[in-house]
Each structure stands twice: as C-alpha cells, then as structure tokens.
Image (cartoon, rainbow, N blue to C red; front, side, top):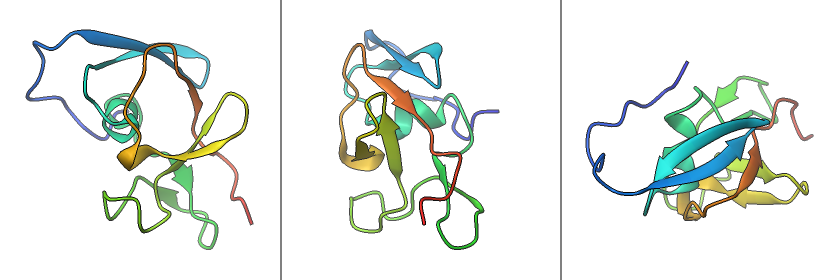
Length: 96
C-alpha cells in the first residue's frame, strides 16, 4: 500500500519508471522519494532495528532514504529528481 496520496501536481506530465520490477509513474519534478512513496509504504529497512523506513529529514542528511538503482548503486531518494526510465529497488534486507 502507498504511504503517500498525491493531492497536487496531478496536471504535470507523467514520468515512467520501474520499481521492484513493476512499471510505475511519477510526475515531472518529483523527487524519487515522492514518486516511490506514492507506490509503496517504505524505501528500506533500518540497519539497526530492521523496521521500515521512508525518509526522515527530507534534505539528504539523515541516511534514511537510501534506495537502490538496478545496478545496485545507493541513491538518496529525497534529493534525487525522478528521471524517465529509472529502474529502482527498495532495500528489503538490512545493509549491516
């Protein structure tokens, strides 16, 4: 289930991306965090408690919004702008 429900910016062009192998779409200008959380309820599991995490500071300082590209590269979802064709994966296993 999605954590966020889009209330604004619905008139902007859609941006297609893939999340965990599923075709999804966000809106032009969305951060990866916004686009992903309109699809699912978390980005990753905490390295310490193994609880779901979905970002915290919203400015790239807290390390809580990591998500993976298809190549395995970690990116900060809160300050990375969604680009057409991105292939992303939530982190379903703690990284420590």
